[in-house]
Image 1 (cartoon, rainbow, N blue to C red):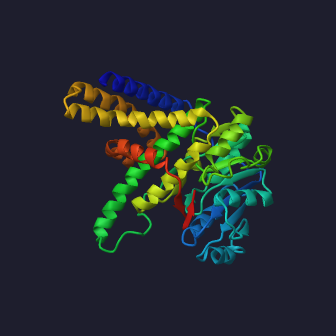
Image 2: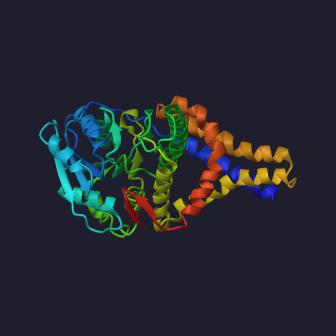
Length: 390
């Protein structure tokens, strides 16, 4: 067994170093001054974001690139989201459209919101984000400038978590100090874990093998969305408005999907405040694996699952006396050292140097996390925005 675990761990180390090399070969994108670039339609699908959306709309009012419109597609919110948007319609320096959607039963509400927004969008480019996100002043300009320079069909962007305290949701029997401490620890662990997804998605794009992206920071040509028939064929999956669409576009335009490696393009969002919310989100993301047409993302997911099981099995084997401890330490080192090198590079780009110190703690729990969600992905059903979806 030790030989098999060593081989798996060595292959994982090689893969991680290849991802690190892929990340390093992505050139930094220049945010050049642009005033005559493409008209961009910023699409924001929302549901119950009355507390968060005003901050994002205010961020958009401070953009250094002004050739854009904003479409807020409200998916039958039960809070005051619609009223909040209506109150701001005439107070912002850009064109803001409110698109209320009927409360119809659908298995992919976010896809419906985006597709309906694109129907009325006037922009050449569609730039999507979420209602609970925050963007810097050069966000729109970063994509406009990159598009003028390279003309890709789709651009994926970096996403990370804010450093502020997380949203409320903890029980009342936790003291403020305990809550703050727990928030920080959980938030830092999520920041490290999420950076691995962003970095892996960017690196595999650089290696011409698209795997992952995030709909909180995604830009594509409107005409290309229409050419690939939008979400047709993948609209039965609740998630996948980002990755599954990216795979459709990449198949039609090989090399046409690129990562915008520019700090001005970074989108930030708050980490989850509870394990339950975190679990439901990751389970929702995992639900799209069954819809992958290419075997590469699925094979990568299986390989990551097996590789994270290797150190757990090695420690169990060492404890049982089946594997000598020097071999156990070698297996652990083959996984953790290349991971640290890769994650440190991503976190530094995302301007999260403090999170680098949390990499070892994340590595300690990550094998169990991967095993948990690898098994959870086999079960259908999850909760999203107060709805039960499949």
